[in-house]
Every structure is written in structure tokens, then in C-alpha cells.
Length: 381
Image 1 (cartoon, rainbow, N blue to C red):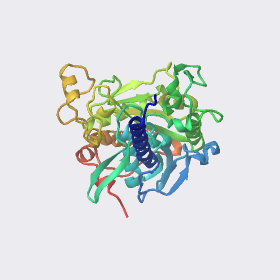
Image 2: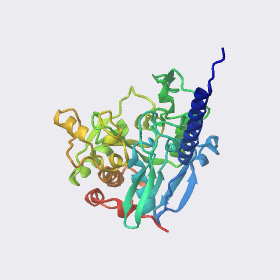
Image 3: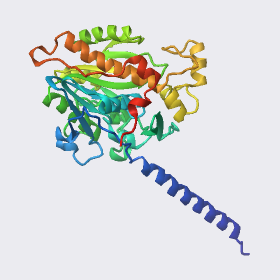
Image 4: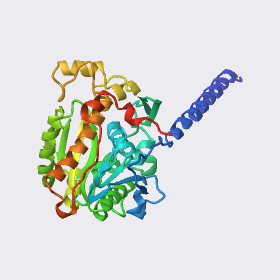
């Protein structure tokens, strides 16, 4: 007896064809993540170099990234701003971009990296249903920016070990942390791609004698260290003075000491292995949290989420939260205000001595940026 299988074979062929079409379509979307949003260097930018200039070991790799240099009219000390350490914390990247496009230092030199872990901008976190990009409205029309992953893209560094061992301390963490740039400092010249990126940044700080280093981050509203400055013990005096000035501008912000037994983070290792005052800033980003609802462009930009509103009513958050959410304009305003405060306090406290201070020139104030960052991210021809 012969069994005829025409219908099952036809069904299988249709399913295979549908799967192939889905793969082709999704492959196009994933390939699109390699496209970088344009940056428009402003009049304050005097040169643009690549991070590999300080460590050739990342030359030609996906970890190499632009370093924007803004030299003041008067010699002074140097400051480094790191945006985009985690590509799913967009206010850090936007604040750094705003500096590149608007800052005109008067004294000292400002170094800015907008996409510190460039590979993180080429993917999103698995199973998080995160958007691949978001837009900011500007007077010249909408401008798009990439939304990425907390960690380096696994296609450039794989597989993850079962346990990640931090090289210089022996600290053990989850294997996926091997791709977290903010667990890789001070880095290794012969390590993973992520460790090499950290090493290149550390070499930049040493070579250029960076006096103040600021790493820009975001955290979920239910995370204790939020709306805060985290400072290495050597930088506590600078951070304390800056915090007072930020509070005078209307910012609710706290100061946290860098834990001495938590290794790999910029505020710990850069403070330990270089002469820079190592600082990190955290703002509140509901798009990162575990209590959020739909993760889309609206949530990234407005920070509005009904589930976080309920969580605040239950007393489960570490920051105030209402129907206005935590918009990205507010988060960028916090970062830019903090950077300006660090530079001003460094100069007023004469921490540079004969070397001189850091004057970033006129930057928009906290209330101005909180209202709308669009005019300061206006695409330029």
C-alpha cells in the first residue's frame, strides 16, 4: 500500500519558504544596526582622532571609535567624557554628542567619546524587545539615534565563559560580564576585545594626562544607585563641591563612594591605575528596568510608563515618579550640568595648580536643557 504525502510536503515547502523570507527580512534589519548615526562636530572641535591612536591593538576592529578633541583658547588641564559605555543608556551618548556639537572650551582641553563601546551600538540585548533606534525632534526635523546593548556585540567576542575573572583583581562575575566594558578596566593589551577597548581608554588617560574623567550612565528606577555621582575616594572632594553647585541649579542628586571591593568599573580602576579624578554619573531610565511595560521609542524618549507609576505608588522605586516620567531631555540635562559643575569646581579648587583649570565655555543650563534638548541637537548641513 502506498501512502501519498503530497499535502504534508507542500505544507513543509510553504513553511520553509516563509522561514527563508523571515530570515532575509530580519537579516536586513540586523545589518542596518551597523549604520552609525551622523555626528556634526561643532566649532569647538579642533581635531578628531581614533581611539586606536592610543592603542594600535584595536585598529581596524569594531571596537575602534572616534575621539573628539576640543582645545580651549587658553592652555589648562584635560577632561575626558565617556558617553555610550552602555548603548542602552542613551542619555550618556546624547550628552556627549551635545558637547561635541556645542561646547567651545575657553581653557584646557575636552576629550569626548560619544560611542565608547561602539560594538554595543550594533546590536540589542536578546529577548528585551528593545527598539533599534529612537528620534529626537529638533527645529530642523527629527534626528535619529541608535539604541543598542549594554554589552559588546557577541559576534565580535564569543563565546562567553561560564565565569568572568577580572584580570587585575581576580574578582569573579557572571560570564556575560566579560562583554561589559564597565567591568573591564583597566583593561589588557592581550585580552578580549572589550578588555582592549578599556586598555585603550586607560592609555588615553595616561598619555594625555587627563585630570578629570566622567563616565555617563543610566539605571532603572528601582536601582538604589540612581540620580547620583559615584566617585573614587581621590575625587570625593571634587565631587562634593560639584554636587552642591548642581543642587543649587535645582537637581536632586546624591553622592556615592566607589566600592573598593567592586572591580572593573571606571570609577574604581581609573582612579586606582591613573592620576585622573574618576567620576561616574547615573540618571533614571525606565526603558532599562524590570518593571516596565512595552519597550518602544516612546518609552526611551519620554520615560513614561504606567507600570512604574504603579510601582512608585507601592513605594518600590528609589526616585520620584509621576505621569511626566523621566524624559530623556531631563536625563541629558543632568549629565551636561554635572560635567560643567565638575569642570568649574576643578578650576575653583585650583586642583590643576600651575597646569591650569578647565573652562568649558558657555553651555546651556539645567532648566534650559530639561525643557528641550532638540535645539542643541539640531542637524547641521
